[in-house]
Length: 373
Image (cartoon, rainbow, N blue to C red; front, side):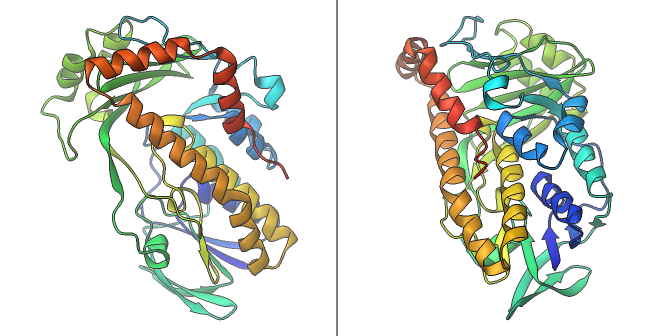
């Protein structure tokens, strides 16, 4: 089998590592001209850690990050909004920890598992069915393969040709992300205000990943990003102001949050979608990369056991409902968190405080359990 993969992100590299373990010939095309240590932080949650364990990559990922002990939602004065969840206590039940890690370190682990063999500066721009083969068109030339995997993200060219659903949809809020050079304990927190949030996640090695979210118009810019963030969040509880101040301003990333309407069909002929190309989601569950990892492990397993056409159909049957449910859940949570009016936020906070711990845990277990069947 010969497989072409568009995109060397988390999903594309996980699939590459899995296929190459089975000595499948894989060519990976990445539009970036070089692999740089970019990005901020990410949580590799228990479902994704269990998926990575099938490749023996759970331990290397854990070694590069830090295990989260608890996750809490707070108000702007630092008081709990609802029950704190001890994800460390869920480790034995779920079979894996939740690891917070610098995205660049996770990427390096996956790249090393692939042997580092990625064709840089080459973008997949389209494809042409050729019966039991597919002609893959790239900026560095055309090639034929048995399978094309579109793991090329939110603006996927493979999805654009297959589905043709236009541009991604703005979720109504923008985000800032950064890595602060300070320690922040083992607890992850997310603070909710009116039309604004601020998250703090320890990632080890004396670093803290943070993100800020605000309900603003798309396409905004910052004259002085540190001053602007301090004005917006600096009066919130400690250590938010310190986290902002401890981040190099040129390393702070601003991104408008976007997703797409869910789709039920992820493949056509010998082309198939994976990760954000198949199910782009807002980051409110922290599951974007995790679901891409699940996709890759399930697709590899099915390709090992079935002819390609059957494997792609079974991949859709196994993955579409679960991934789309998480897309929809993350979208709904983001809308609630983005409320700006005082009465709506007061009601939201009251409901959060009244939510029983068992309800929160039941919802989390559903997301954090990797379906092994």
